[in-house]
Length: 246
Ligand code: FPP
Image 1 (cartoon, rainbow, N blue to C red):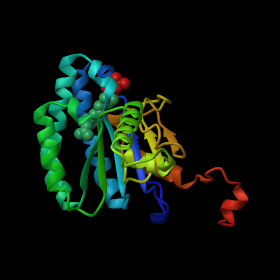
Image 2: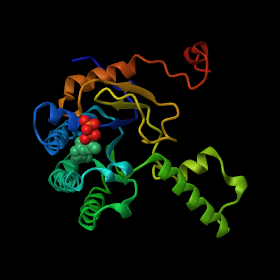
Image 3: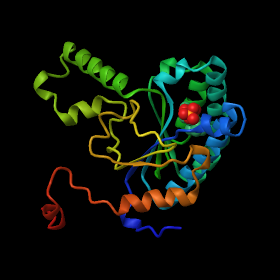
Image 4: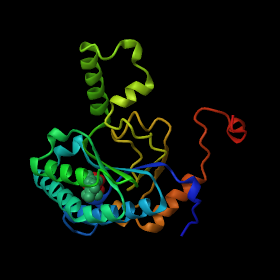
């Protein structure tokens, strides 16, 4: 496995877990089997990230656009999600991991919301990694909803137009309080952002791999992190300014 520097890991890692359907179809299996195998990869990545000391892990588990999939697949994904959360909460407690949910909760079935509420409450006191699940999530939807919340606060006299800065806007997003991701991994060879964390990814290092999510192994995960460690992050500055720490 690639050697990793513990002090140069991303603080916040975001992942677009893609290719479950193709993984299954290539094996003449039902798409849901791909999602089930994908859930095993989730387990590995969550445990690894937490053990490595990554503070924030955000997973794109279900997009606003995924509702247009066949109802049988949507239902199966919701059931899988519920089972995963129920089954894994004890492990989250052992690993001191806290659940956080972003996205449009009002779209989710009642029973899923209840499971999410229970898991969020149970893990609320944990002080280790924050595991954010993006569910019924879309970046444009998040930004427009943040704008609507700001407009309401302005009408209520709690906010003035002069208060609207990059920092205050960020607080109105679902991710308010989380740092922006340092690193984004997307599996399965697609080189798109697909409406994920549009605002937050402004300076994020991007990593794409051909591997489908169910085949994404611990070795591949370490390889991706080693790639991140080899990059120079300049945030618009020159290379000299970065090395002189100006
Ligand atoms: C994309 O693959 C994946 C999804 C839409 C769902 C992701 C869900 C999981 C990995 C399992 C459950 C999640 C958690 C957090 C336990 P795709 O179906 O779009 O693949 P394709 O592009 O090959 O069709």
